[in-house]
Length: 206
Image 1 (cartoon, rainbow, N blue to C red):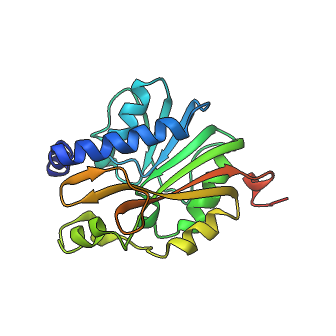
Image 2: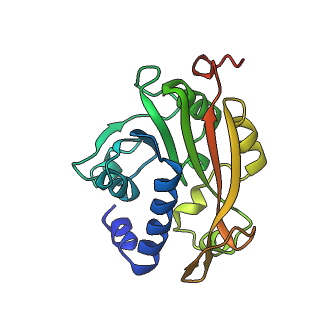
Image 3: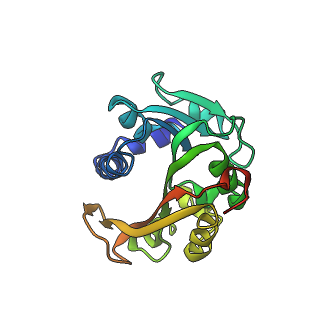
Protein backbone atom coordinates (compact mmCIF):
# COMPACT_ATOMS: atom_id res chain seq x y z
CA UNK A 1 0.00 0.00 0.00
CA UNK A 2 2.78 2.55 0.68
CA UNK A 3 3.96 2.27 -2.94
CA UNK A 4 0.42 2.90 -4.18
CA UNK A 5 0.08 5.93 -1.93
CA UNK A 6 3.40 7.24 -3.21
CA UNK A 7 2.13 6.88 -6.78
CA UNK A 8 -1.02 8.79 -5.87
CA UNK A 9 1.09 11.71 -4.68
CA UNK A 10 2.66 12.30 -8.09
CA UNK A 11 1.66 15.43 -10.01
CA UNK A 12 -0.14 13.41 -12.69
CA UNK A 13 -2.39 11.55 -10.27
CA UNK A 14 -2.92 14.69 -8.20
CA UNK A 15 -4.42 16.33 -11.29
CA UNK A 16 -6.58 13.27 -12.02
CA UNK A 17 -7.94 13.18 -8.46
CA UNK A 18 -8.57 16.92 -8.53
CA UNK A 19 -10.65 16.63 -11.71
CA UNK A 20 -12.60 13.67 -10.35
CA UNK A 21 -13.24 15.46 -7.05
CA UNK A 22 -14.53 18.57 -8.84
CA UNK A 23 -16.85 16.41 -10.93
CA UNK A 24 -18.25 14.72 -7.83
CA UNK A 25 -18.72 18.01 -6.00
CA UNK A 26 -20.97 19.15 -8.82
CA UNK A 27 -22.80 15.82 -9.18
CA UNK A 28 -23.46 15.52 -5.44
CA UNK A 29 -24.94 18.97 -4.89
CA UNK A 30 -27.87 18.78 -2.49
CA UNK A 31 -26.63 15.50 -0.96
CA UNK A 32 -24.96 15.15 2.44
CA UNK A 33 -24.41 11.55 3.55
CA UNK A 34 -22.34 9.74 0.94
CA UNK A 35 -21.29 6.11 0.59
CA UNK A 36 -18.15 5.42 -1.41
CA UNK A 37 -17.93 1.79 -2.53
CA UNK A 38 -14.44 0.41 -3.07
CA UNK A 39 -12.85 3.57 -1.70
CA UNK A 40 -9.36 2.18 -1.00
CA UNK A 41 -7.26 4.76 0.89
CA UNK A 42 -10.02 7.33 0.24
CA UNK A 43 -7.99 10.09 -1.37
CA UNK A 44 -10.93 11.63 -3.22
CA UNK A 45 -13.24 10.96 -0.30
CA UNK A 46 -10.97 13.06 1.91
CA UNK A 47 -11.59 15.99 -0.42
CA UNK A 48 -15.34 15.48 -0.21
CA UNK A 49 -15.23 15.35 3.60
CA UNK A 50 -13.20 18.56 3.68
CA UNK A 51 -16.04 20.24 1.78
CA UNK A 52 -18.73 19.26 4.24
CA UNK A 53 -19.94 15.84 3.09
CA UNK A 54 -20.36 13.04 5.62
CA UNK A 55 -18.58 10.18 3.90
CA UNK A 56 -18.58 6.47 4.68
CA UNK A 57 -15.97 4.44 2.83
CA UNK A 58 -16.55 0.75 2.16
CA UNK A 59 -13.78 -1.55 0.98
CA UNK A 60 -13.04 -5.26 1.11
CA UNK A 61 -9.41 -4.53 2.03
CA UNK A 62 -8.63 -3.58 5.61
CA UNK A 63 -5.08 -2.74 4.53
CA UNK A 64 -6.35 -0.22 1.99
CA UNK A 65 -8.62 1.42 4.55
CA UNK A 66 -5.69 1.85 6.92
CA UNK A 67 -4.57 4.64 4.61
CA UNK A 68 -7.88 6.49 4.87
CA UNK A 69 -8.09 9.72 6.90
CA UNK A 70 -9.65 9.72 10.36
CA UNK A 71 -12.28 12.21 9.18
CA UNK A 72 -14.05 9.36 7.35
CA UNK A 73 -16.06 6.49 8.72
CA UNK A 74 -14.63 3.34 7.14
CA UNK A 75 -16.16 -0.12 6.98
CA UNK A 76 -14.49 -3.35 5.90
CA UNK A 77 -16.97 -5.36 3.87
CA UNK A 78 -18.22 -6.64 0.53
CA UNK A 79 -20.18 -4.44 -1.86
CA UNK A 80 -22.42 -7.40 -2.66
CA UNK A 81 -23.55 -7.77 0.98
CA UNK A 82 -23.42 -4.36 2.67
CA UNK A 83 -23.88 -4.20 6.43
CA UNK A 84 -26.05 -1.08 6.30
CA UNK A 85 -29.74 -0.58 6.92
CA UNK A 86 -32.13 0.27 4.09
CA UNK A 87 -32.22 3.97 3.14
CA UNK A 88 -29.00 4.91 4.98
CA UNK A 89 -27.42 7.32 2.49
CA UNK A 90 -28.29 10.26 0.23
CA UNK A 91 -25.93 9.14 -2.53
CA UNK A 92 -23.34 6.52 -3.45
CA UNK A 93 -20.22 6.77 -5.58
CA UNK A 94 -17.99 4.26 -7.34
CA UNK A 95 -14.71 5.86 -8.35
CA UNK A 96 -13.27 3.36 -10.87
CA UNK A 97 -14.21 0.48 -8.57
CA UNK A 98 -17.38 -1.23 -9.87
CA UNK A 99 -15.56 -3.01 -12.71
CA UNK A 100 -13.31 -4.79 -10.22
CA UNK A 101 -16.16 -6.30 -8.18
CA UNK A 102 -16.91 -9.91 -9.16
CA UNK A 103 -20.67 -9.75 -8.55
CA UNK A 104 -21.30 -6.26 -9.87
CA UNK A 105 -25.02 -6.98 -10.20
CA UNK A 106 -25.25 -7.73 -6.49
CA UNK A 107 -23.30 -4.58 -5.70
CA UNK A 108 -25.65 -2.40 -7.74
CA UNK A 109 -28.69 -4.02 -6.15
CA UNK A 110 -27.28 -3.46 -2.66
CA UNK A 111 -26.43 0.13 -3.50
CA UNK A 112 -30.05 0.80 -4.44
CA UNK A 113 -31.18 -0.79 -1.19
CA UNK A 114 -29.06 1.39 1.09
CA UNK A 115 -29.98 4.63 -0.68
CA UNK A 116 -32.87 6.81 0.42
CA UNK A 117 -35.80 7.56 -1.92
CA UNK A 118 -34.51 9.62 -4.87
CA UNK A 119 -30.98 8.76 -3.80
CA UNK A 120 -28.19 9.66 -6.20
CA UNK A 121 -25.51 7.51 -7.79
CA UNK A 122 -22.27 8.36 -9.58
CA UNK A 123 -20.37 5.49 -11.18
CA UNK A 124 -17.04 6.30 -12.82
CA UNK A 125 -16.13 3.50 -15.22
CA UNK A 126 -12.75 3.05 -16.86
CA UNK A 127 -13.17 3.16 -20.64
CA UNK A 128 -11.29 0.17 -22.13
CA UNK A 129 -11.13 1.95 -25.49
CA UNK A 130 -9.27 4.95 -24.08
CA UNK A 131 -5.59 5.63 -24.66
CA UNK A 132 -5.12 5.86 -20.90
CA UNK A 133 -6.54 2.38 -20.28
CA UNK A 134 -4.56 0.76 -23.09
CA UNK A 135 -1.36 2.37 -21.89
CA UNK A 136 -1.73 1.26 -18.27
CA UNK A 137 -2.83 -2.29 -19.05
CA UNK A 138 0.47 -2.80 -20.87
CA UNK A 139 2.03 -2.78 -17.40
CA UNK A 140 1.33 -6.16 -15.80
CA UNK A 141 1.75 -4.58 -12.35
CA UNK A 142 -0.97 -2.00 -12.97
CA UNK A 143 -4.17 -2.34 -10.95
CA UNK A 144 -6.09 -1.94 -14.24
CA UNK A 145 -4.98 -5.43 -15.24
CA UNK A 146 -7.22 -6.78 -12.47
CA UNK A 147 -10.36 -5.40 -14.10
CA UNK A 148 -13.18 -7.96 -14.36
CA UNK A 149 -15.83 -6.17 -16.43
CA UNK A 150 -15.19 -4.16 -19.58
CA UNK A 151 -18.61 -4.26 -21.24
CA UNK A 152 -19.80 -0.74 -20.45
CA UNK A 153 -23.25 -1.06 -22.11
CA UNK A 154 -23.88 -4.17 -20.02
CA UNK A 155 -22.90 -2.37 -16.82
CA UNK A 156 -25.05 0.63 -17.67
CA UNK A 157 -28.02 -1.61 -18.49
CA UNK A 158 -27.77 -3.23 -15.05
CA UNK A 159 -27.60 0.14 -13.33
CA UNK A 160 -30.68 1.21 -15.31
CA UNK A 161 -32.73 -1.51 -13.64
CA UNK A 162 -32.60 0.42 -10.38
CA UNK A 163 -31.80 3.98 -11.44
CA UNK A 164 -32.87 6.53 -14.02
CA UNK A 165 -29.55 7.28 -15.69
CA UNK A 166 -27.67 9.77 -17.78
CA UNK A 167 -24.10 9.23 -18.90
CA UNK A 168 -21.14 10.95 -20.51
CA UNK A 169 -17.44 10.55 -21.24
CA UNK A 170 -15.14 12.51 -18.96
CA UNK A 171 -11.50 13.32 -18.18
CA UNK A 172 -9.18 13.39 -21.15
CA UNK A 173 -5.76 11.84 -20.61
CA UNK A 174 -2.91 11.67 -23.10
CA UNK A 175 0.36 10.43 -21.69
CA UNK A 176 0.92 12.55 -18.59
CA UNK A 177 -1.38 15.32 -19.81
CA UNK A 178 -4.79 15.74 -18.15
CA UNK A 179 -7.41 17.84 -19.92
CA UNK A 180 -11.15 18.35 -20.36
CA UNK A 181 -12.71 16.00 -22.91
CA UNK A 182 -15.99 14.17 -23.43
CA UNK A 183 -14.78 12.46 -26.60
CA UNK A 184 -14.70 8.66 -26.61
CA UNK A 185 -11.14 7.43 -26.90
CA UNK A 186 -9.67 10.62 -25.46
CA UNK A 187 -11.71 10.48 -22.26
CA UNK A 188 -10.49 7.97 -19.70
CA UNK A 189 -13.83 7.60 -17.91
CA UNK A 190 -17.43 6.86 -18.78
CA UNK A 191 -19.57 8.29 -16.01
CA UNK A 192 -23.08 7.06 -15.25
CA UNK A 193 -25.17 9.26 -12.98
CA UNK A 194 -28.34 7.76 -11.56
CA UNK A 195 -31.45 8.68 -9.61
CA UNK A 196 -32.98 5.84 -7.62
CA UNK A 197 -36.26 4.55 -9.02
CA UNK A 198 -39.30 4.20 -6.80
CA UNK A 199 -39.39 0.77 -5.11
CA UNK A 200 -35.88 -0.25 -6.10
CA UNK A 201 -34.64 -0.56 -2.49
CA UNK A 202 -36.30 -3.98 -2.48
CA UNK A 203 -35.41 -4.79 -6.06
CA UNK A 204 -39.05 -4.26 -7.04
CA UNK A 205 -39.35 -1.54 -9.65
CA UNK A 206 -42.54 0.36 -10.27
